[in-house]
Length: 570
Image (cartoon, rainbow, N blue to C red; front, side, top):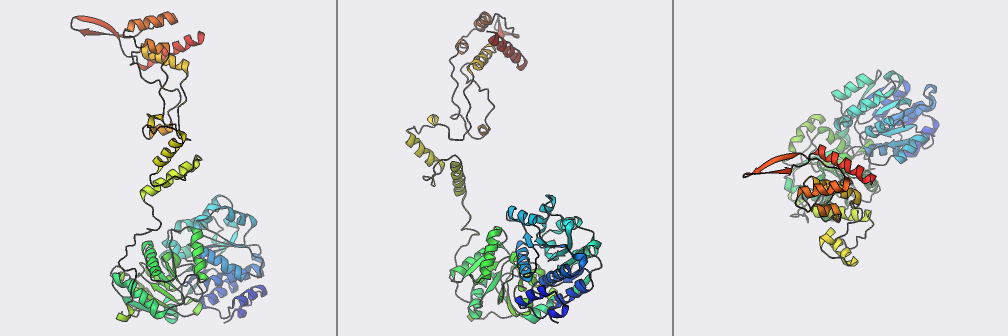
């Protein structure tokens, strides 16, 4: 069947003709029949690359334009990855070229401002990842009850990534299942996907496209058994033999992706790598560069197995056998899209060979095995090199410490031109020499922005000294500041940070007298009051003396209050 047989609106058909779509794919035909003609929900198993994105977008466009009860409705598309959200947004804008629908996407890893403006302006088709959708819903910037269509794309991947609780929260914030249309797409069917369809869908029509038929008919598969240490030589030999126009090399770990990309680069191949922990703007930039042909090969983890569409991709190479059988389907789905032909090769080493069994069980047949001939082993210029993960990006502890100090200097407005491996000590030494200061730490001035104590109040200091003398405390101790202790005093030695108090008060000089009675007489004469202290009898040989005992906290408080009163009166 052709698209014209379904009687799409003229504006929709113009967009389809511009893209060049003519024959309807199987999943598209069944979705159009269920959603447009029967107004039923759709529950579909279909691997990526079969045209399911166009299936649900075109069906929703047709209902919004032609059915009166859907006038003004909006559609929400939930996807597992940012790349897939961006891809669906682009495809939707191409298909709706002659329509007045506003299409946008929201996802994490980027700022909120631009997405908030888009939501404020209004959007008819919203594509997003679960976390960002819930964020805007909690902030009441996106009303989920206003969406009359819900599309859950790559449902099995959402479950694998742990988004099932978030997906349930999104559905509960929307209209009841009998007041909306729900479309669920999954490359593989499992119990959780089936339960979701049963609980949150209204009499869905089932669409089942067998994955093994697609892969066998349109993708040429090869399997090589090779040792782990020979995989790079075999990869170079395959690329030399087949010389594809473009290709994707999949690995199971970020470390392997980075290492394979570096080794291919050393062997004079145009290559770039894509892993999940890269910032979102950089990931989008890499995908755009690959699509535009700036790089011949892309090395990626499974983060690129979904949502990455490269026109006429010739080859997919599984450098590592995927850990999950479903990932094999998604990897090889990058090639042979929309009925085109493609080629995929898999290298089974001693580490990942045990993943072949579940993959072949899912496919329903054995992957054809090819023998590794001697002429297929190419010379590897990177052989013997050590590739620690992220060596180009990881910094040593000393470098990170220097970076922190550099940021601190910038905060305080200091020049950091002289900053080098010597770190802060070099900077301080240069500043001291420029200011004519000594290198003696005790003569250093506090750094800008550091916490310092203000000088003690002379009147309060005199009273504190008096109390210390009356209490029998040792003389010569530094008078404490009345300010709160600096936060920075918790860290490091502060003996050079706070200058000693000036002990020039008469009370401090009097405190050097040995006799307690003389000190008491002095304060009795000055304040006209006799300070009574607790006494203890101490016996030394046959002689008994009365000496003042240490003043406890309650006594000290009372003495301090009376001294303050005397000072204020005088």
